[in-house]
Image (cartoon, rainbow over all chains, first blue to last red; front, side, top):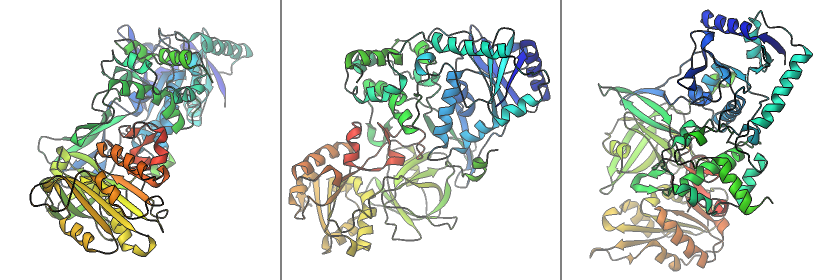
Amino acid sequence: MNTKRMSKDAFKRFVDDLISQQKQKVFGVCAKGDRFEFEQLDSASQLRLDYDVTLRPPGRKYFLPPVETLLTYEVGGSYQSVYDDIKFVLIGVHPYDMEAINQLDRLFSKDNFDTHYMKRRHNATIIACDVVTASKDVFASSMGTATVKAGFDVLLTDIGDAYVMEIGSQKGDALLATAKEAVDPTVKDTEKRQAVWAENEKRLNKHKLNCEPAYLPKLLERAYDHPVWEEKAKTCFSCGSCNQVCPTCYCFNVQDDVKWGLLEGNRTRCWDGCLLDGFTKVAGDHEFRKKRLERFRHRLYRKGKYVPEKISSPIMACVGCGRCVSACLPDIANPVNVYNRLIKDLGIE
Amino acid sequence: MCERCAIEKDIYLPRLATLEKKRLMNPTEMYLRLSVDDGEPFDFIPGQFVEVSIAGAGEVPITVSSSPTQKGYFELVVRRIGNVTNAIHRLRIGDKIGIRGPFGKGTYPVKEAKGRNIVFVCGGIGLVPQRSFVNYILDNRADYKELVVLLGTKCMAQRFFHSELDAWSHRDDIRFMETIDQVDDCWLGNVGVVTTLIPKIETELRSALVFICGPPVMYKFVLLALQEANVSKENIFLNLERKMKCGVGKCGHCQINNFYACIDGPVFRYSDLSIAPEAI
C-alpha cells in the first residue's frame, strides 16, 4: 500500500477536520492526570501522540467495552439483538495494542463469529502510531510487538517535525483521501522511519525475556508443576487488576438486568477475570480453579500457550505492554520474571 | 458493515421454545419437555447442551436428556440450585423460554460406538446427559452390542426417572444396575458407591466403550476402578461439567487447560485429556 508524509501541524488540521465533519466519532489519546487514556476528542490539541501507555487498552475499551448490552428482552417474550452502529476513528494505537487487536479479531471471528465485537471492529478506522516515549514497564521488544506490520488502517511514525503515514487498508486510503496536505515522503523520510523502527525494536525493553517469544509454549509444556507458581501466587490478592488492564484478556461474564417494571430488561456482558475467586465456580459450590496458584498459573499459560496455540499465532497473547506489571500491587504479575525464572531453572531445550 | 456481519447470526440471541410438560421428579430435579417455536428443526447429537434463558434471571447450560430419535420435542432435567434454575422450576406449562444451541463438538461417539459393548457409569444427576445416548441406543438397538448402565445415587429421596429405570431393569437388551450410598429400610438393592458395581459387570469390559458422568469427585474413583479392569484410556469418555457463560468458546469460564468444555466437549475422550491436568 501507499506511504504519505504530513507535517505535524498539517496532521492537527487533518484531525480537526475529521472532528468538525462529524461523519464519525474521533477518539484519541489524551492526558488524564499524569497518565493517558483514550477519550473522545473535541479538538486535535488534546491529542497526545507522545504518550507512553494508556490506562486501558483501546482494543478492549472500544470493541469489547467494560459493559455492553447484547440483547433486550421482554419477560416471558422475545429477545432482540442490540448493536451500537457508530462509525469511529481511533487515533494513537501503539503497535503492541494493535497486535492485541489483531489477536482479538481472530478470536472473535474464529469458531463462532461474534457479531457484537466484529461490527464495532468494522465500524472503526484505526490510526496506529509508533511509540515515542517508552513506558516504565514496556517489554514489547521482547515480545516482537515493538513495531506492527498489519491490522492498522494508517500507521503514523514520528520523524521529528512530521509523520510518515503508512496506509494499511482501503479504509485508511479513503480516510487520507480527504487529507489535502498529505504528500509523498522523501527517501530521507522513510530512512528516518526505518531508524525509528530499528531503535524501537531494541529500546522498548524494560524487562528482557531470555528466549524467543515463540518458544514459550514449549517452555510451559515442561513447567506445570514448577515451584515458581506457588512462590508468586502466595502474595496474590486475587484482585484481577492484571486481567483488567491486559489488552489481550477477553473473558467476560453475561448477566441479566431487569428494569423497574419487571417486564423488560437487558442482557449485558461485562469484563471478567480469571484471577478472581469464583471465576470457575459452578452450582453445588464446585470450584475448578480454587487455589490462587491455579488461577495465577492459568493466566500465564493463557498468555504463553493456550491462546497462541488456539489461533496458531507466532505472537504470544502477552504483547509486552507492561500494564499488568504497573498495576500489580504485590508485584508478581510481570510475565517476563516468571518466564525467565522458568528458563533459568529448566533451560532451553 | 462487513459481509460476514451481515450474514452471520447473533450467537447470543436465543430462539423461543414453549414448555409443554413439567414434572417434579424428586425434591430438587424437574423434568421439562420443550418444543421450539420457529418450526425449524432442532437437531442435536447425544451429549450436546443448550443454553436455557429465563429472561430476567439469566442463562444456564443444560445437556439435552432426550434422544434425538424422539422428534418434535426435547427434554431437559434441571436441578434447583441457583437463581436461574429456581426460576426454571417456577415456570408454568405454556411459558416461553429462550434456547441457544445445541452446542458442543465433543458429543457421544454415536458412530464409533456401533458394534461395541457400551457401559454407562452415572452418579446421581449424571444420569441425565447419559440418558440421551442410552435411549438413542435403545432406539437403534441392533447397531450396538451389549449395553450396561450403572447408576449410583446418594439417597433414596434423590432417585428419579422411577418408571423409566424400572422399565430398563425389566428389559433383556439392557443390563441396568443401581446402588444407593445411604439407605433406609425400604431399599432392597445394592448399597454403596457406584464403583462397587463395576466388578459386577459381566460384559467384556476391555473392548467396551465406557461413558462416565457424575459429580467431580466421582471421576477419580471410577477411573481407578476402570484401570484395574484394564479398560484403555481411548475407550473411556468423560462428560465434564464447567461454568459456561457463552457456550460458544469466547467467555473463558469453562476452559480446561487447552480445551474449552463448551466447544471441545462436553464429552471428552480420556486419552485426549492427558495434556489437561485440570480436567479431573
